[in-house]
Length: 223
Image (cartoon, rainbow, N blue to C red; front, side):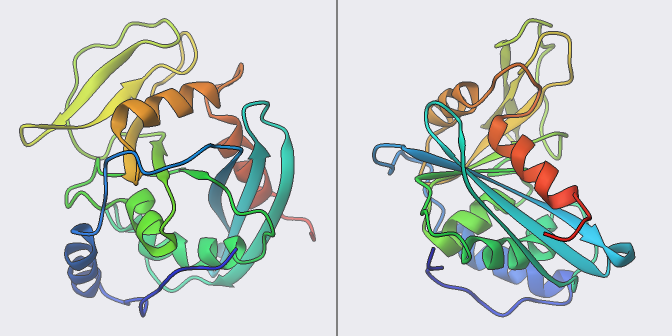
């Protein structure tokens, strides 16, 4: 898969904010995706005490969710863990992994935020803009916003609101487990993002895309 564009990767939060502010205007939260035949999950793990980032991409056929291709890439970790700036820590290695796959996915589900972010530019937005791919943020924890109480049943959802606007949806992906926080990344609307996340779920809390990528990213044996 060819990466559309990139920029130099900053070393400070101030530089990162400038890039987020500049690129946020490129984010599209309307549906600009064709037929979805392959969905991808991306995730990141760390080796050598965090010094090395290990990115994984898993590409699944859709809608039957069978693993079709996978890739792993490593590079030195250059940006610290700072909430709201996860993409600067993770996306460089994720781009390396995406360049290794021969199947170009039609949609990428990210283990991180989309527009549910202080500057409306979470990891899924950043990855989507750089690859020009439709992306969805499927985060495991809340970064910004508030929502009403969520019923315990699978499929229950509540809008996530921040500074007067709906930035995502809180989704119960499995009955009785902690919810997911879904928001558009790029080239997709919130209703369509919710639909695809639901269709990528089986019996687990996480979508199959994320489950596969997470296993690959956290597996420490040689590839």
